Every structure is written in C-alpha cells, then in structure tokens.
Amino acid sequence: MTKLAHYDIVGSFLRPEELKEARKNFSQEKISQEELTKIENQEIKRLVQKEEELGLTAVTDGEFRRSWWHLDFLWGLDGVAKYDYKESYKFHGAKTRTDNTELSGKIAYNPDHPFFDAFKFVKANVKNAIAKQTIPSPTLLFRDNRSDNWPNFYDNKKAYLDDLATAYNKTIQHFYDLGCRYIQIDDTTWAFLISKLNETQNDPKEHEKYVQLAEDSVYVINKSLENLPDDLTVATHICRGNFKSTFLFSGGYEPIAKYLGQLNYDRFFLEYDSDRAGDLKPIKQIWNNRDNVTIVLGLITSKNGELEDPVAIAKRITEAGQLVPLDNLALSTQCGFASTEEGNILSEADQWKKIKFVVKIANNIWKSF
View (cartoon, rainbow, N blue to C red):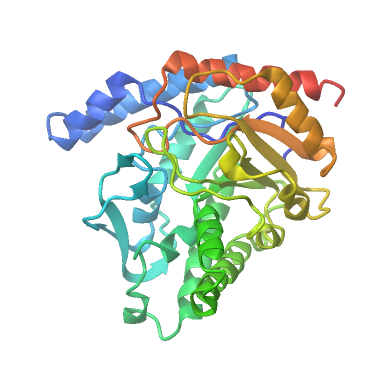
C-alpha cells in the first residue's frame, strides 16, 4: 500500500470557463473532438501544476473530461448503454439533467475504456505527486433503475453481480498496469442506504430489501478488490450527493457502519461537514481495528467558500483520535468541488483557499508524524 499524507482531496475541481465553453461548443458540433481534447489537455496540465504547487501529494485531473462523476465511467463498460431516464435526481433545491444508464448486454471489462488514456495523460504530467484515479462504485449500477433489466441477460442475479465485479477487478488491475498506485471508488449507495434503512425500520419486508442491497454491495465491492497488488491503495468516498452545492441524503453512519467495516478498502473518505452526518462514534466500527485502514475526515465543506474555524476542526480531529488512532486518520474536504461539470457554488479562488486550509491544518496536527 502506498504511504499517503494526512491530508487528501476527493478529486473533482471546478471546471475553468474556457473548458465549460469548449464542452458546450462540442455538444453543439461547433468544434471537433480534437479541439476539445486540446483544451482539456491544456486545463488539466494547469490543474496538476496547481495541485502540486499547493503541496498535494496525490493529484487528479479534476474529472475535467467528464460531465458526471459516475455516468461517464459506467457508459465505458461493455454491456452498459446511455439513455434518458426522463426524471431528475432528487437533490434538495436543484434539478439535474436526466442522463442515466441501462444494461445493453452482459457486463464486461472494456480494454479500450477512455479512462485509461485519461489516466496516462495525468501520469505523464505529474512531477512529484502520485496520480490518483477516481471511478464510481459498482454499486451505482444497482440503483435508480440502471439494471432492472438484468434478467434479460442473466439466469440469476449472482451471475450478474459476478460479471460486474470481474469487470471492475480487471479495470482496476489495468489502471495499475498503467502506473496507477492510488485509486478511489466513489459511492453514494451507502448514503442512500442510510436513508432507506432508517425509513423502513417499521416495515420488515421493505427493510429486508435494503439489507439485501447492503449485503450485495459488500459482496461485489470485495470481489472487485480481490487479488490486487499490495502496493495499490484503494480508497472509497462515501458521498451524500453533491450538485450545485446541494445534497441528496442525510443521517448518521450507524445503519451502515457494520457493512463499511467489512469492506476491504485502505482509505475511507467520510463526509462530516454538517450535522446531517451525525456524530463521530461510527468511525470506530468502520475502522474495525485494521492497522492498514485510514479514516479520512471530510470536515471541510466544498459546498461554499467560507473557511471553517480551525480550532473547531482541530477539536473534532482530537475527538476522532479517541476512537481511532491519530495515525490512522486524515483530513479532506467533505466532497469534491464539481461532481458534475456544473460545479458547486463557490469561486476557484475559494476552492484553492479550501485546499490550502486542509493542508495547513493537517500539517499542524500531524507534524510529529
């Protein structure tokens, strides 16, 4: 496992205006794919340079080549197709576009997935930091009608889940072969389950449906991570939704802590920037006495530009240190700054102030390590 700093980033950054304009022009067939790629390359180079200048030890391409944090990757798998679901995601106070996925055949690894070339470009432009790759969790295909048609292609659900896990496992291995030593699997399913497990406590039949979803999620994720190289760090970000500074899900981690504690990740990014996340007690069960596991506390919000009280942040980290050893903790923003190309409601200057803030606080707290 790669040794990482006690500060980190979730991975997405605000898209520069030139890039937004280029993507708009490309969608309207005003510029070619080559012209769009040239602008993407230019902006990613600038971003990586900025990340390294600020002292980040793991950097990303900001997800600049994506429209969505999750769908662009899923569309690149064999057996997954794009379609218009007609309904927006149910964010609090904002409506999204209606893109979605559906199965078009058996799920399989795609050796020509466009994310591979995207990673190679980042890797080639990093000087001293680790190039980090973010992808969505396989669990995203379990929800929002994305694979309701699996019986059209499989005799039983386990065969479908096994194919999905195998596709992910091969994809992660190929990223490793390209030089990736740090991959992050972003996941909104667990926050969805917090809501559903709480809502259905008095309805045993419905509750069991979500318990099964949680168990299927543990199965597929751990199968996806089987037999990967020892020097590959695999993280997960447990996301509550992030669109134009709004959110999807609320609730403390208690209903899902026992499941997260079974997942074979090295690093857990947990959102703790508001009261919606509950208290810190569940991090002990999530860590589960695993020396190789780091809990990354998302105490700094990426939803607005206001800087938190550093004393209050230090106090919460100290509180977390009573539950999990301080050396097994780290600090980050609660989410990325642009889970979709629209981005959160803050400026680029605010974004970089947040990153500097995270690095400064972490360096002060973990300076003895």
